Length: 83
Length: 403
Ligand code: HEM
Image (cartoon, rainbow over all chains, first blue to last red; front, top):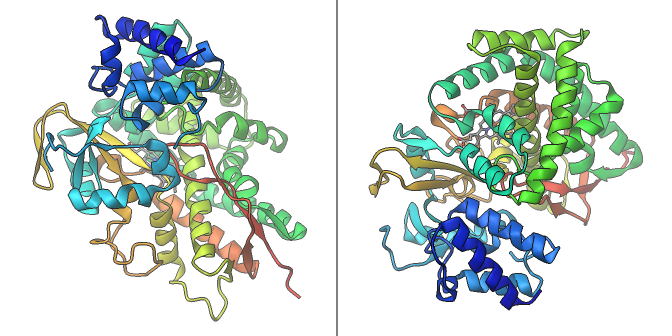
């Protein structure tokens, strides 16, 4: 899966969790600035993990400045080992 | 520091466990408590502010139940075993449920205290003897990790051959107490279900010890239902609360003593410069501070260390940072006597119910280590993959034979 696919997955899932449209610009925000909470963070990590078939830690969203950066790190295979 | 501070301080949970002081010390210059921009919350860094938070009636504990229920609904999966464990952990509650659980733990720990210590003494000797005979061993996996479950096994009549399985099934690296991955939670649920089933069997069978009667009495006297199910869930919380925490104090504490003595420790020898055993126990607990953080939220506006905390704000205590606060603990990395009380056991209405017992178990371990003569650190240490309780998963040591 490419990072573009990950971004699409994130946009789709976040829109469901947050019950509002989420745009690519929103991915340049921090996770909490989006209005997401820890359950959303755990959920998104799980959905990405399922899609990619590799472990993704929810902490990834705290370790990077923006959701986009976190997704890029996951796409390059660092989802579970950064820190 | 204000809530709208332009500083964007983030909390990297993994770095906080791996290298806590590198992460936390630089934050101290901004105050006793700092506002984190991700996740949005106050982080408490000093001992005095930590004590204020722990004693503030307007700051309540976070309950994880709602989060786990939301995940369960969102993914249509069964996380009920995690929910059961959470229902029995006192610091997941405030109000009447907390009072009842706190009473049940206090009563049980009070009534089994002497037997717990006797079983601990025996288990500790046996496990260290094995290491001594082979001249080396893993102080984490071969000793510290096993004590609480072995002692529980002794008390509850679990056959020795079954205790390892109990240990494996309850070694969950903090998955129940803190946010974890969904996959880990699902795995934990499967393990917890098997433990609950076994604990229910034990609650029903006649055991040679009166441990189960003491469990029943603690529940009834605290106004809780006494059934095989409630006993098993209460005992699950007992197993989860005591294992990793004691292992953290023992492994991180011993590693620190070894490192600060050039890799070799001879407790009890004439040239041993360490404080007396009681101080040493407290210092091992302070320096290890196994439980990394404790979280609260404001039910009303309040003030901590002169800082206004608004209703609804989340406040996270770094017990680790508070216990290395240089204003409270001069040269915080040094093992010294005459320190003020540390906050490794929390404080206020959620102060750890097992604090007196744990102090005694650590003193037993130190006495046993003293009889070994010297201990040397070996390479190969690894920290456990646990973001809630800091401990070594592996701590190899050598025990040179005494000529
Ligand atoms: C070195 C070992 C231990 C440490 C450092 C430790 C630390 C703590 C801390 C920090 C809390 C407060 C959590 C909070 O306020 O959010 C706590 C609560 C608690 N601990 Fe421990 N603990 C240890 C061992 C144990 C053991 C062996 C048991 C018994 C099985 C135990 C039972 C409890 C209980 C029942 C509470 C809840 C108290 C309440 O909420 O009223 N602990 N512990």
